Length: 311
Ligand code: C5P
Image (cartoon, rainbow, N blue to C red; front, side, top):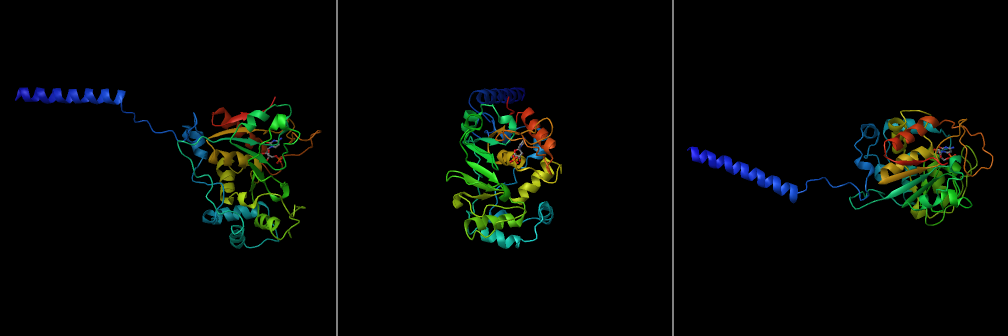
């Protein structure tokens, strides 16, 4: 009886040692990295970040994700009221007969390493010499009218995505995605119009009635995503988020590593631009300029993004 007990005990000890040996030498139970870069945004173990980042929000709209909740609809329709716009769902239906109805950027995998640069238009890009660094990224997202021609040394020349709204639109070449942030239904109608009838020439100001861009590369940001940025990221600071700030959050959702350039007002709170010789006195208007800037800085300080502030 005693011998049997000793045998059982020895067997347990032997099996445990064998398992420990196998585990340390051959079995690796590590969870695979969510992306193929050295470090990935999605694996950040940071409670401040996980309180804000919610991967269930997809930035780019498709037919499947176009329906707005009552709350989102209420917020969005108050951002920029317009008296001349059509029915949202009818306009969306028409829109996706024109532009691709695709589920973009749902391709995250342990083999993907997508490095993105978001280039804002701040005057802090002057003499920055960031051009080569920006162009070395897989995706380069530029905002509104921010030009590259003549500014290559500081801002680079590659543009994979041009982020606009009707009143800030520019022509793009056929290697660039035109990405619309719609602030009202009329903006979606404008997008249809620039590729078809060209009849919309005015919103609250004059807008381009035609645009040079490949219609098959056009994307529209989902108002639900914009609402998420306003409530979750900006905690309702400002009337609604700036296009630049929303682009930073968009990049967090579609990229594995994010670099941010050209953000930050001057010391008087003016949104100066790298392409203006004499800074204009643009204020941050309805946007929560300093809250946005501090949030981007926080992302940098927590090593979630890399923020380049110029010199
Ligand atoms: O001036 P504009 O709106 O075209 O600039 C694009 C974006 O760059 C803004 O939406 C803002 O987020 C950012 N910006 C900034 N500081 C500046 C100028 C622009 O953060 N001085």
